[in-house]
Length: 118
Length: 405
Image 1 (spheres, rainbow over the protein chains, first blue to last red):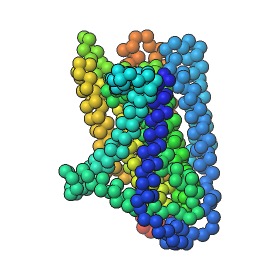
Image 2 (cartoon, rainbow over the protein chains, first blue to last red):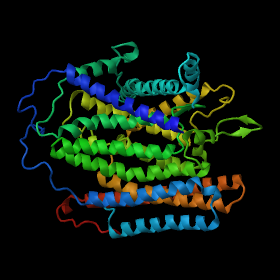
Image 3 (tube, rainbow over the protein chains, first blue to last red):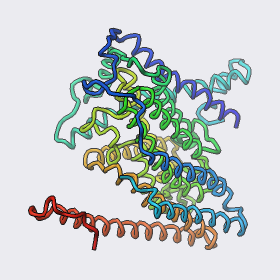
């Protein structure tokens, strides 16, 4: 058990080193001649106007919130799935009710237009 | 202790090293092998991509450098190494430099739970499937970091779009992974693979793949894996033929190459995970008698999967962003939730296993049938609507939006 997570730890060190060394090697081997135009913001040759951090659609927040709800649901569903063969009838009914409530919530979001993207 | 490192462990123990030291060395060697397999694999994957796509477009593809052009990708990598590493003046340096590294980091860590053959698995974690889900979000974070830190409006907007797409398709993907987990009762990928055997008179035919039991779940997984790896029907974020680039517009040289490395590897490993969950992993005829066959079965399935993705890349048109989002939330999520609900019910309602099997299979087939029917009639209506809206020339400009029948 501990060996497995130790393996993941060692692998994560290597997984970081492999791309990092590639990037560092590219930086070492490539030419370094920066100038003002080269390092300016790339917009196909047009000069950029205004601030970079522009306003963006509120829709992204909605998607993020809906995702959060379902991700939490997934976290609850995985333990239920693991112990499913030992669950009592009461636990099964509550698990099914849980999924049903979320399905109804999805229908409500659909009805309210939270899923429209236009 | 896994099988592959055991012999090395014994060898080191025989040299008189203390047990802890030899454990760490054995683990480190295994990790180094897995981590260095990934870049080599990427070279092969890029070669396959170029060959398959060029064959579809009636070209030959790379054929000059090395046998069959196999070394073309090496030459490209060397060229990228010699390119200048341009850093935008206003970029946030730390997250700008970290983003390409993180995107590869998340993908390489996936290798740890890939079961290549019986006993050949980096670490058979008891939370294997959840571990994969957690790694998926590292890639999302890397994309958002790259978009935000580049100090470019278009990179930022593309970063938001990547997050919206990946978040939307992560839900059906993870819920589809729940199907095999619910059936087997374990999140270990090694155990899920083992559970897909088919014993007839004590002989393991190795064909009890979960795609036969739950074709609907497998289909949902495949579609969402395509979207998660940003492959063709869903590659509108970096549509190479239409845009300059997506969130990595300000990247050059080796950093740019890292994003592509991550994308190719991600496509392959999502396919490999799909193979383990639904297509039996290393299972196949005679695998119990000759375990080494499992490596071949696994690799053949995983590469077949990759070629399938490339086939889709060569033939499918792109979807629009609103079509993509509504397909995830209005089709895939309700479908996968109802499939899970039915599987939960079926596993408790019916006593014998064969009856559960038939019930789950019937539920999957019926659900796919219903969804295909609904979608077909929807698209037929859509076609009629667009034809009417753009039909008679005299009405252009005076047409009101068509309200429906």
